[in-house]
Image (tube, rainbow, N blue to C red):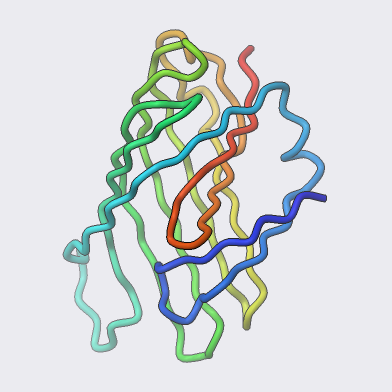
Length: 158
């Protein structure tokens, strides 16, 4: 099993997160690594609620390393009144170059925190690759240590 230690600012009480990835996620053919900067900007929700437990944010990333380019996307998050429980989903479109191959693809995030138990999955949406990235599949692992963002991207191309 692969373990990643992550610190996040998505929810103030997340603190340090330990993610465990399954053997399936480790079985991709090729790995890309690098760093990124991210800007999360609060956006208006489509509906209003009495409490402020839901949030919507835009995502803008600049990727460096084996995968270089930009991403744009949207995140929806939910906090709860139970300490240590929250969740988010996000979709982001990646436009860039992966080990010399240029194109676009879409990443889908699903993150949960269940009373302190953390889970995160960021995967390539099937058949979303274009250009030289057509046929791309994979798992994007986010690492945040000492305020610095980096990634490992385990992927395969058909």
